Length: 592
Image 1: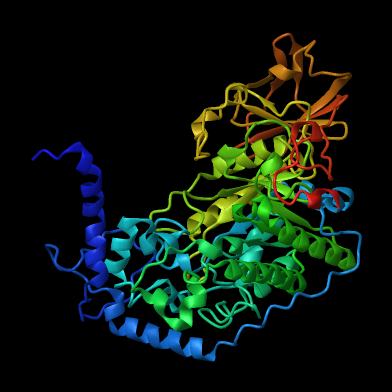
Image 2 (image 1 turned 45 degrees about the horizontal axis):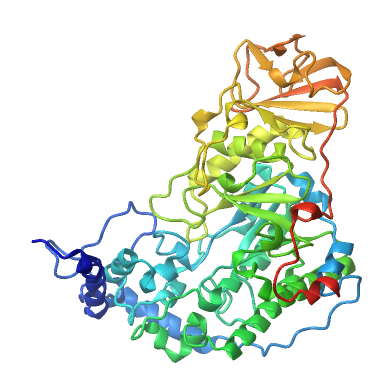
């Protein structure tokens, strides 16, 4: 049958949406079954009416009924939220203006020195473990396939909505001390977990948001417990806060559980007026001040939702409060936010964050404080079938980031029971083992006058979406990255070079050489010095037979007049000459 091109699009869209509409209204079977295993291999559950035996949706089982009863009991017992009343601004030099941040802010030296930290996506979305941590958006119509899958697996949206994952987010096996010990062994210098994602469920004991992990689910103050544990192990502690996105993140679906009066504020789909927007903004400020005062984070990270200029006033309020409060504590702290130049969330007073390694553009040495947040697997939150990056690739990314004066923040994806999958643990321990040998060439270093040499350095692949390219195979022994300390140049070779390592940037007469003479060369993890020659082709280093580690190999070169590219601790993401005119919006905040 031929369909008129004019109607082919609408018909195709109807055929895609129709099954979701039918499933939304379909009653579930009454047969009992255990809750779906989020760790099981991904399989499609046949919906009722399809060929073959169809499993009953979870909502129609005895476990589903018990789940609803537990949720209702927790809702009845939950403390009412505290009315928003912002504390007074602490005394100090920081005011709620860009000029004040520009004049007073300095990025923490501990952060620039750290080079490797961890973050985490863990929450209600870890229970369905499907598609991504945006599951709540997808299940309410943002993705028709996920919506159909949700209804077939869990039940119609009026019987099993996103809130019904809360009792299944149990964290019953969670051991914060064991987590912290693992993080220390990984070589990470800080840990900054997600305190609240776009779904609006807080993982701390919040007086302002009753939908939190103390009132519901684990009934534990997750941020409070892990902050104590990681600090006991010597790590800094931060909080990644995505809550600003919650205002309009979830799509309204009439006739779903979003209509439940007890959960309307949780879903936030019916309160989006101008007055609601103001109330939400005030709540966002209050929750951040609560985080600051309760947990004294060393780092406070925001996602893209805060980037627009229209939010400058509330962003500046949080920044001034945070930085003045930190002066009272005697701590050096920082915000970390996204966006570049005039589209940056914070024009001044923030560490710059890039999402995923492939989006560090342009690839060059940077003289401002910056980091990249990069997932250990194919998604930030745990999903069934997650594909992990190899230990070799993760270590190379740490090295690559360090060579450009950055900090690599690796994201972990725990399970809803509070365990970290063994594959992730293995990679953390491999990283820690490598840093145990080569940490001298990473921690506390600064960039050289060039960050590397090799095929990828000379012609990086076109990768605008920032996916997992380049694969490990891209990095050959010709790919080298450089880091420095005063009087020392480190050359980190991405693969074992065989008998001889050749560094073309250090050829006799190279413009990169600015004085001095090589006195000795050592291989970190290997006793003794190495023989070398230097000619017009490069510095040629005789390598030992035994490798000191498995992946990237660090040569320590002493004697050269090493010029370091230092970090300007007060700089934004670009020099003023490259930032362009002042942005549209509340420009008076720039001059006050």
